Length: 266
Image (cartoon, rainbow, N blue to C red; front, side, top):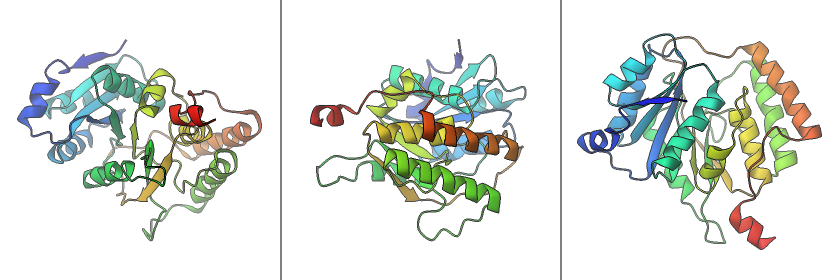
């Protein structure tokens, strides 16, 4: 079971630091990110958002630094991977009455000022008067000019193709960890969410699309990692590509309920 530091005092701390976006929780999964986590928490809180850092079994000072900067911190006793850490954050959000979560990476790549753009995109209504359930911050939408090594970019395009082919959704950056999610999809992810590499990004998008949830994306700026070392390498990415092909042929490793509006319309 995860332990949570400062959770009981989180609401009071949020009031003291000027949280302006009620109902929204920024969840930051972190593994050995002591070099970056302090600045990330500062940016999120300065932008006016409540913040939960999920320390995924770190062996460094990640949890202590995040707590000192005023974040609520859920500490996992072992490393579960990003997906396991995110599910912990989703469950925390649902249990504490939040209806929207914004995922932010702990390495400083995501710009906190863009969080509000994700939230604004969630509320954009379609012809049926409904907003979106998930909005992905994309490095490749628009004219961002973001550069990625050729092999990685090729893999991302393959994942996008799988989502377009099998989920009938157009997401140009399915591996982005910068996204906004709200209920009922948030509640569904809190109940079941994959822990393996890219399951939390690509596979989650694919499953949500297949089940009728409304997805969108906006162009965002992403910076270089601000310190530390990435937890996944090219070998892990190639493994994920093989899994993506398997998913296309045989199905996903987890599932969520059909979106309520989609179920009633069926």
